[in-house]
Image (cartoon, rainbow, N blue to C red; front, side, top):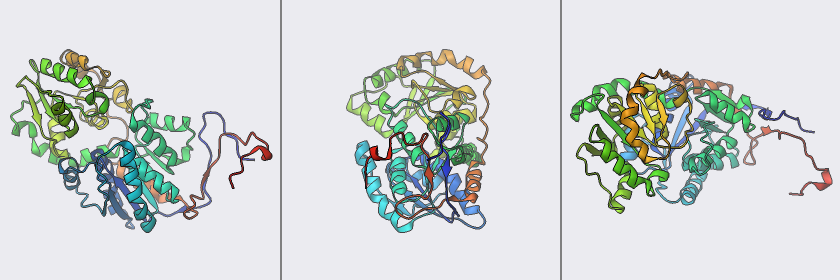
Amino acid sequence: MRERTEPGAGAKYHARAMRPVRHVMSVVGARPNFMKTAPVIAALRRHAPPIRHTLVHTGQHYDDSMSAIFLEELGVGAPDHLLNVGSGTHAVQTARVMERIEPILAAERPDLLLVPGDVNSTVAAALVAAKLGIPVGHIEAGLRSFDRTMPEEINRLLTDQLSSLLFIHSPEARLNLLREGCDDQRIHDVGNTMIDTLVAMRPRIRALDVPATRGLERGDYLVVTLHRPALVDGPLLDRAVAALDSIAAGMRVVFPIHPRTAQEMQRRGLSFSNPRIELLEPLGYLEFVSLLEGSAAALTDSGGIQEETTYLGIPCFTLRDNTERPVTCDLGTNVLLGLAPERILDVPAMLPGLRSRPATVPPGWDGAAGPRLVAALESGVPECAGPAGLAATIAPPRPWAAAPEQRLNTA
């Protein structure tokens, strides 16, 4: 009979052996992945003895302005494998990643596959690795919006269930994982690796002084980023454009526009009439954070910007009904406006109150998350039993209820 666990407790994790980690493969696909992974790659390179690292770039973001420039700025270098999956529906994109990464994983068989975040590349790579018996480590595990209409939420849930090691950056992430039956021994609170990148790049970011080079007065403009389908792909975009036009009368707006947002505006004949709205091409990481650091506030539907503004102490207004990063609201500078573009009109009036609200940087958002993650690998990963899967098993929360003769014969 299998071991019983109490309701709500994480399932017991049984591993016959732990394998030392000598080769780590990382998979990136969308630009936030690069900032989350770069500090881990740097820590692996510094580790003694050295840990071999292989980088796979799926090409989910394939425009240089959205991809290659980030690899260059972060010092990661060219990927070892570029899959060139490009854009497509969720199913097409996921399938391409799975098809193209499988022979790479089968040939190289790393001791651990690291996947960051919640994009299609993340869940696709994790699924292939798990079926090949290659342990998976999930960077930024346990985040939940509790909104399954978001494709990212499905990706998070599945990736966490496929992962042997779960690297979290906030307390609620642990609670979410335990509620879902994950064993606490799989969970490692390492902190926020994306903030490591910001800390490491801070001197270069300040030296750029993008506000000065663009003729912007510090603390006198709103940075806007909008790209999620819920806001961009329907009638809400029209209302957001109108609201931004309105508030620009009293507050300068700087909008580095995402390619898909620009395409949708063009397709629908939308444009801004107020000359105080400055549209920019997508910026490199250093330029964008320099712009953000000099702003009065940010208006966004991005998850990562909620974290960056919290670290920088910049007020953030998020055009979403929910957030998978509640720590940015509880401790940081973030306010949820809801999926309601008309609330953009409230931003100028809300800004003084948000500036005066006490805000702190969450624990572990200190620039040392990458080294902590690599240190967690020193105890090894669950030993594999070959292509059939891990020799580690997760006990179900209760023993079989049916008599042996009633069980399905799957042989």
